[in-house]
Length: 246
Image (cartoon, rainbow, N blue to C red):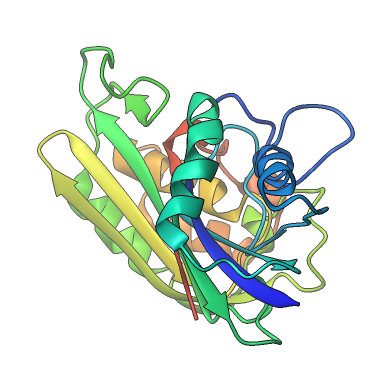
C-alpha cells in the first residue's frame, strides 16, 4: 500500500464545501470519483481540514492510500486534471509520502488569506473571488487591530455555534493586513482554526476599518468570549486556504 499527498487548488463557488456530505456537491467527492476511476480502486481522500461553502483553496492538502504505484507523476496529473478541469479543481502536485503521514494530523500550521477589494466600482474580474467593500476602510487601524488577535487566546467570540472543536483556545501565530492599491489582503497563520473563525475575525476587522468600532471596542469583543458580540462574518468568497505546512 502506497501513501500519496496531493496539493489542490479549487474555486469553491459551486461547492457546499470540501468534505463529503449527504446533500450537495463537494470538492472531496469530485476528486475521489476521478481517482477511483483512474486508479481502478476505491479511493478515500483525507483533507488537511474543511473549507465551508464558497471558500476557495490555493494550497489544500490531502492524502490517500493506493495499491498502485504511481511511477509517472506527470501523466497522472494530466489525466486527473483532464477530468477535473470542468469542475474548476486542479491537482497541482502529487508526492509519495512515508507510512504514517496524515494530511490533517501531520500538519504543523495552516495559512489562510482573505481578500477585500475596497472601491466604489463593482467587481468584474474578481467577482466571487473577493469581498467588495465600498465604504472607505482605515487600513492603518485594521493593521493595529489585527495584532490584537495574535497569541494564545480563547477565540469563543469568533466561533460558530456548530463548531465541533474540543476547545476554543487556539494560538494565532500571525495576523497581518497588507494593502496593494484597492486590494486588502489579511493573512492568518495557526496550527488550527475554529469553524468560521477566520471569516468572523475579518468581519470584526472591517467594523474597525469602517470606524464602527475603535481598538478598545475590538479588544473588548475578543476578551468577551461571547459570540453575540461578534460582527457579521465576512462572506465566503473572499477566503482562501493558502498553504498547509508540515
